Structure formats: C-alpha cells, structure tokens
Image (cartoon, rainbow, N blue to C red):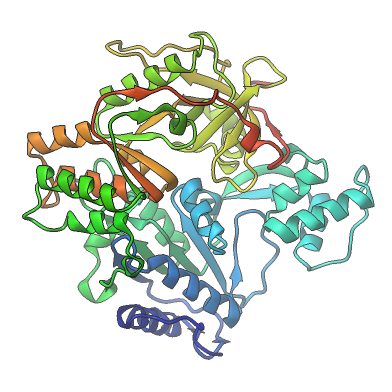
Length: 508
C-alpha cells in the first residue's frame, strides 16, 4: 500500500510517520496495509497540534483513508454489525454535531463522541435491513416494509451512509427499529478525535476506557473548556507524544481571515493595533468586513459571537423585536441552542434517544414549527446526519436585567432550549459558518479588563476563536447597532433535507 497521494509539508509528513509508527506498535501497519490481531498492552495517546490552517484536517483525512485501506472497519455509531474476533476498528469523533458535520462535508466519516459512548440496540428484525444496507446480507423480506421502500432506503444509504436516515426514508421511525440505548461496554480500537481542545477531563477519561489507541487533533490557541483553568487535555501529555504542525497552509492562498488570526500571536499587537489591521484588511479584501452594525438577516443561521452573557441576551431580544416575534410564541426559522434535557432518571432510554439524535447540550437547532402533540416542536438539528426531528420542548428566552427567563411554551418534560441568535465565543468552538459576525465591543471590554488565560491575554484567545469560525467572510462589528433584515424569517432552505422523526420525551 502507498502513502496517500497528497503533498505533505515536512511537518505533516513527520506527523504522519509518527502516527503510523505508533499504530504499527499496536499491530496496524497503514503503510504496508497489514494488520495483526489486537493485543493487550499499554495504551497509546498522541496529540497533533496546530493553529487554524495548519493542515490538521488534511492529515486526519489522509490517516483515516490509510486506516480504511489497511482493513480497519469504520464505526459510525449508527449500527454495528457483529465484528470478527480479530477485526480492527477505527472511529473518527468530534465533540459536537456541528464539528462532526464539518468533517463529513470534507469526506471524513465522523460522528460525535456521544454516539460512540452509547450505542443503539436494534430490533432483531430490522438488524437484517441494517446488515443488507451495509452489504453483509441478502435483501430481507420485512412485514409492513415494501420492496420499493427498501430500495429507497438503499439509495439513501448509498448517498449518506446513515442507517437511521435510510430507514426513515423507508417510512420507519426511530422507535420502530431501535429498542433502546446502552452504554458501550466493549472496547474499540483506534480513535481519531478532532477539536480535542474542547474535551474536558471526563470525556477524555471515557475515551481512554474505550480506545487503547487515541490520536487527538487540536488547536492550542483556542479556549480551554470552562472549569479547567485554561488547560487542555493534551497539555498533560509528555513532550514526545505531542506533534506540532507549524506551517500555515491555508495562508498560502492569501486568506485574510487567517492572516488576522495569526497576527494575534504577536505580543506587540494590542486591541487598538489589531482593529486597525482589521480595517485595513477590509479595504483590500471583501472577505473581511469592517461593519458598523450587526446584520439581523445573518443571525438566523449563524449567531453573533460575543463574550458577555448580557450582550448575548440584548442582541437576542433585538433580533426577535426586529423580526416582529411575539412574546408567547416562536416564529419558524428562529435559531435555538439545546441547553440539556429535563427528564427524570426513570426515562433514561428516552434521554439517550434524544441525545443520540443530536439533541445534546450545545446543539444548534432551527425551529420549524409546532409538533402534532401539545408541547412538541418540529426541529432541524444543525449538523446531524438525520437532522429533522419532533421532540417535547421547553424553550427559555432570557430577558435583560431579569433572573428568570421567559418561557413562551413548554412541555411537561423534554429537551430545553435557549435562543441561538447570539452565542458566546466559548460555545462557538467546534463550529464554523460561511459568514461570522464578531461583536468587537465585547472583546474591547475583555482587553480593558486585562485578563489572561494560560499566559495569553484573554481578548486575544477570544478573538482568535471567533475569527477562525468564519469559513468565507468575517464581519468585525464595531458598534452596538442592529440593521433590519432584508427578508422575513423562513425555513425554505431547510425543507426536503430529511423526513421528520417523532421523538417522545414525555411520560407515557
């Protein structure tokens, strides 16, 4: 087998070789395409670190392809057929649905950490369909599922490689074919973890229980998880286990957004100098906008990024007001952020079902309209493989200068949501949007406070994370103003993506 036909920089080539050497010690030779049975022994953890544009995703993709060509089976979290005793496996994971979807759009079969920690228990009858879709069995005959529906499922699976989405196309709901969810008790093999700077200690410990071979891909310049004193899980690794990608590849194309992000590393650049750099970049390149106000029209699909909660709440209320949203209802198209699940322990199965469908804390969601049952909402989970669901919902809209949020409607119990027209920069980590609006007055406030995190000025870490969320265009908003939207809220861009799955989250 040959190394992937990709032109690596020297630091990428060295990192590829180091990962290959580590996997070879575990019986996986990705360069020659040979495997040995898994062996008991020490765990192996490597960290590939680099700033935005350094080629981490390119390297992860090449390593993933090499692992698949060597014979490792990719575990997606949808459905796992019985593995051969000596079979070797690979899982490519990200902390959030959005981060996983960014990888999938680049051809990397990623799923969320949660989908691997918990796995579905399929009804035996529908296991036959899943096996057939994956190419491991004959086309089954299932009562109440027509041959035409099975063919539609097959066509769907060939396109998106998602078992639940394919079965939904055949007219089946999750509750038809998944009888429950259970915590994984069987180990896997190799885990590639993207956006590892977002991992907290508990997630890291859980992953080490499952994977004897872990490779973490992370950006040391991002913000550490809340409560970890500015430290990331890979900081504690010994130096030989840390691989650094220093060259910035995406800058080769003259990307002004990344130029600005990396300029923050210069100790001589303070906030005033940096804002002048943004203004000058905006004069040269339309990919940077020196904006005098927030664009309400962009907030429905990509939130304004802020530092302070008070700013977030004020912008959300301004967004709803300018769209004429009533206090006692949501308009179709309003963005939401999942804030967790309010379900008692006796409904553990329902909790796992909701979480496995993408309704985990921090998930970005678009409100599509009321569900068929009281208290239910139809939702589009951004970045989920099967994005459209219906779930019991509790929506909380925080109000300026008031402790208690306003609740326009609520189920007895279910998934809880906050409004998502503006989010904190911490919560934006792992996500990217074509256009990103950064609320500069908040970063100025952080600069004036003089706070630091892990030896770096906090405002610079905030600015770096916020700027690198922009895929195509950065809007650096310098005034506390909101521009009226050119068009009303809508959901036309989300229709037809996938059928809606009903997810029960109330007491039966």
